[in-house]
Length: 131
Image (cartoon, rainbow, N blue to C red):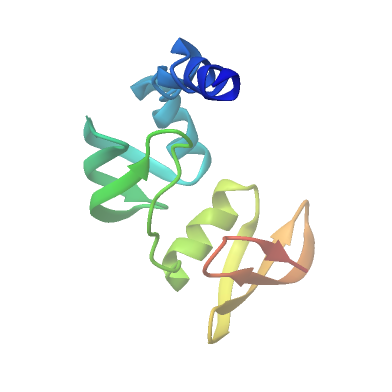
């Protein structure tokens, strides 16, 4: 009986009933900007998600983007296109960006950074850049 009472007290605690710490729209916009999104239009909360009606990702239009309201990260993100990878590198300070080809989800590019020529591989799924 005592353990049943203890269990009832624990599981009926107000702390367990609190709503999760959802991000506010300004926080979501900061996260999207850091991930290459701009011109975000129609940002609305729908349950555990935020929905973006229109935006640009590295200059390319995207629509109906669904984001996790706790993290601000897209639920599903299509792989980067070659043009998006080029724009991402320019945003990160590379110049003279030229595509070299694509092997599956790896986009190969040549660019200059602080005047030095480099060859890069961009993971189209994550946006990670390797030399």
